[in-house]
Amino acid sequence: MEKIELNNGIEIPAVGIGTFTMSPEDAENVVYTALKNEYRLIDTANAYVNERAVGRAIKRSGVQRKEIFVSSKLWPTEYTNPNAVDETLERLGLDYIDMLFLHQPAGDWKAGYKQLEKAYKQGKIKTIAISNFEGKYIEELLNECEIVPQCIQVECHPYFSQTELRKITEPKDIKIMAWYPLGHGDKSLMKEPIFTHLAEKYSKSTAQIILKWHTQIQNIVIPGARSEEHIKQNIDLFDFELTKDEMQEIAKLDKNTRYYNGGEAELKQYAMWQPTYEKR
Image (cartoon, rainbow, N blue to C red; front, side, top):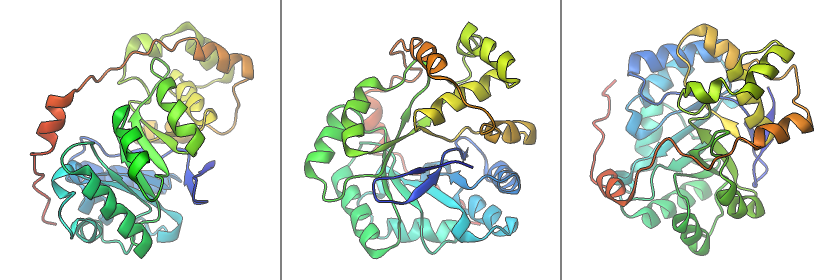
């Protein structure tokens, strides 16, 4: 597994498993299967309501804790809860979290970020991250924060490669973790001639070609596969390399087109919705 070095010197696996929209039962089975198939990056969140299941899978797997990179996210309603980090640790059943995000730039996110900085200094989290903080939000955060985040999780795929955001993140060496890395399953993206050609050339699937593109531009990817076949395929990326010319051809696909277009009204809703955490 290739790793990517973050701006504080910690390394993160380039490919992991995401658990968005997974029930606790599904999340436990998927994470367990992923760990048995050499995955070492697991992504969850308060809002996914499956953190306990992720923790159970980690214990079941028998993989040493130090080998696993776990990321989770504080939900906006937790930003002003002084026990939010400890409660997240308790649900996961862990002594520390490798990466903890603010999930949305909603509510009192400045208080939330101060929580992350405090937990980072205490060793409860190893890296600080933000999710969906684009435009004015990341600019304001970087102007005010004491510790520069190590990672930002945003929508990113060949149709939307986050060109403008990179102008802000690259000088600070803030790595991008991509959600919707395969374009939300858009068949038109998956069937782009460049991907079908490269899939045939390298004896890979078009999904594998797209994921390889991500890793070669230093994106971290967390596709949420459920079947063991797809779980295995999504990590089978490191026995080939796309050429410079091929990468340039893929770059031409960027249309600055998102699949998700939430606005300020949704951010206000995020600030009010409270997850009902699983009890076991």
